[in-house]
Length: 500
Image 1 (cartoon, rainbow, N blue to C red):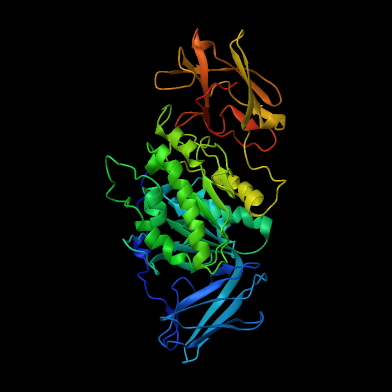
Image 2 (tube, rainbow, N blue to C red):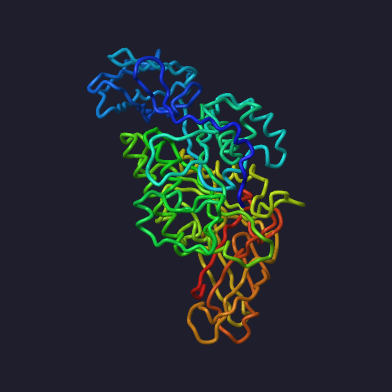
């Protein structure tokens, strides 16, 4: 599950901030070739200066008047005007004591922050058809890349280290960049037609609590791990402090998150943790960016992909926990979120990266883009969710259960008769530890309904239902239920109450 950094020689040990003349400094991630957040949001610039009370002035050349602020306690922060013109532009920043910083080739677009563990970190050089995808990606000069180095800290930091400074996609750096993050931007840009900036801040094998700020950690119980991975920080807060906190002042548009494998077996705690992380990241980005990053910014995530085949393991329960027990996103616990299902995207043939790291990141990114278009960009005509159960009808004589999907509005594509289990119990009114799960094959279906047999319960009562409750529930895109219109899979599902 852990991805070893193969390009550590490229690590730029640069904790310093950008400095040109005098004592005026910009935070280290403000560099040539970057993308600043476009209007209607206002991009925030911040940095340091030696002269207390001095005036710092910034201007995007050719885009309105200059703006200024005052140095307080050695720091300064200001908002640029809301700019929708993509550029490129030159940004000048000057101070009254003679400091002068210039940023060249700056674009204005949407900035997405990509984070998580190994499946987010997995780079363009490791995916299917990587040579083709890299050649194609190098042409996307209006997508700009920034990759954060592996750093951890016991206290919140305001600066960090980088593997890749802001750059256009090129032969040197694109192969080492997050595939999910870049492919998402590539596919999304064809719908937006303006620049996209990407911050890749991920570390394989890491836990959600390591990415959580102090207030989120305090909200939820801490999980217990039998074995800590020496390679990968799992201590609460340490990655948030070093790889997220430094970016809070920067205006962003949204976040992509792909994490959870390390937290398998901790599903009840994870339900609390993911909600706390989303809430706290939103609050902190909003407050530190002078309100320019919205407090409800879009948060997209990938439901865990495949694992060891044919196992009913902790992975399905963690997939369910990622949705805080709703099974879909957005939901009341996770508003303004969107989810890409990936459990049906196992590799065809041998995967040198192992079962937990399927190399088809193209479909993952495409599914994320559908969610982003609907939730983040308001294109409500875009279907981005697979079919989901909305009603049940039990026939006790035939021992069948008919499941309605999406209130009967979504045409179904049934690709297998396997995937459901029913929970059987003689005495208890709900599925408990004394109950038994048995396979329930699909015996019939129509345009929007599926019928399964619970004859396997025998004389026992039907007290629960689950779907795709395996680490690797099917072959590539061959799970039982898909939307006939969008080709999206039905997500994992479980109820431990009688489904009728």
